[in-house]
Length: 427
Image (cartoon, rainbow, N blue to C red):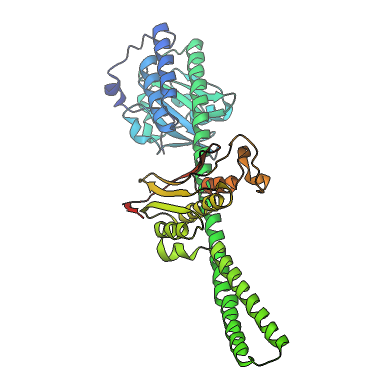
């Protein structure tokens, strides 16, 4: 266990011997302390550095030998030493004080300041914690850190080896400092929780995409191994029957021809369904070659491909492939373009997919004359931009679109990536 904020004998050497005749009420020290606290608060949202800086500033400005910053745990059941002046900075994160136990625990539970001028051992609230060696200190002031938006977040303790009379002004000033720090700590906690939620959301999105693609892969396999194989067999038998019944009545021949035509159409639909559910080319070739194959399949338009070989998470590769597929389909359906360029480039931090065309373009600010549903028409752009933007956002990326009437369209999808060692391929 530890001391609730009572310090060790080594603190005298560390502080170089304070002038204990100066209290918290000294105007110059007050101003310096407030400026320093504001600078510490502005430095960043991390609780550890903030608490450490605050402890040092308070101890120096108040001419006390040691200062402790105890922060309320997320459980709300104990305080954790989060900042301390040397040599007790070594105990940060290791000292926990139960709410309601000791002077610090009493301040936390009652949220009222406590001043002990001497004879701490005679105070019924006092409890000795060996790690902080309170026997080396005579006087202490403990105040709660609380703010209106965030409520109670912890306590501030200052201690002196020599006897100190802490005044009401001292208590008010340190309480005000505690309120400032509490507001900053509340924001830091919100920042930490928001970051954790964002990470959880990213993991959830990956899991959703993985689950969707797993189900698509299973359905594609079922269609390929079941329906498609049976259709191939049926077509074989129909071909054989047609050959054997060459001299049969016209009606039978017509029925066989009709059956063969339907079988062919069903096979084409089955192949399209398999590709829509899960593009096999990604598994067989990887993203770069899959994009090249996709570009070659685009009718009526000359597509130039400039891509980099890269290793990306599966769900990111799928998203980029689908975005490229949608963008090229838009070119064929709407752009009236003759030249298209598809690019994939990136570094260790970000991958960028670009699709340029020299088509008729459109006005981004005007409603599109497209049959796409309203849910796919953010900002009036239409043409399935919503689905592409959604795919990019689900993998932590973003979609950018530039277009102008008679000046073509550019679609850019940028996604974070851990890809390594890109190798350029111009195709």
